Length: 184
Image (cartoon, rainbow, N blue to C red; front, side):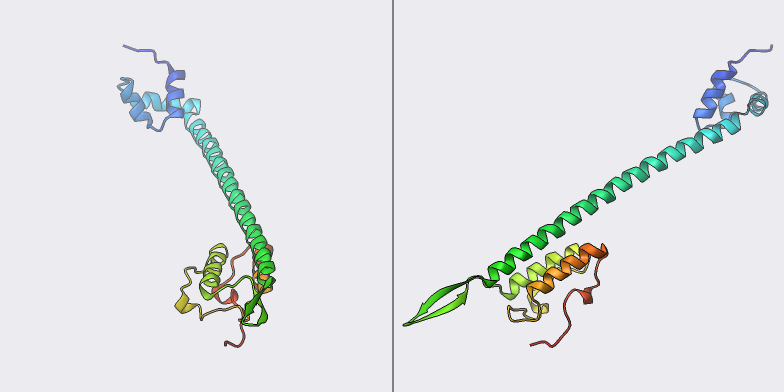
């Protein structure tokens, strides 16, 4: 008994699926899978399936690349904004550090800095900067060599570090973050 099969429906199912011709024949009750194989070969099912998979793979790759590009662009925007905020904070901090006020000690008036920054605050600032520069963070006071306002690390140096990171777009190494020179 010669049964008629809906080869167009079988073709659509084979091309859009991932089963073999033998599995397709078994699912549709075709006793002789070679009959379906002959039809598949004659009508180009194999090439059609390969072409569909390549188009699908190409679309998936494009979507993943677009999503990756959007994430990278957003990360760049966030990093750029963070560096701008750091630059503004350093500028304000520099102005604050130059501010003074008069203090009376006994009968004498002394000019004294209005803003004092100790080793703990400097270590915290450097820790935050290093986080954005992809350098090791978590500076502890014991390892910070007791930076103070009189150290070689000036506000201009910190601003230069932020500007350099913004210009190059690449992280600085751990030895390029702090200036070299004599230690007090």
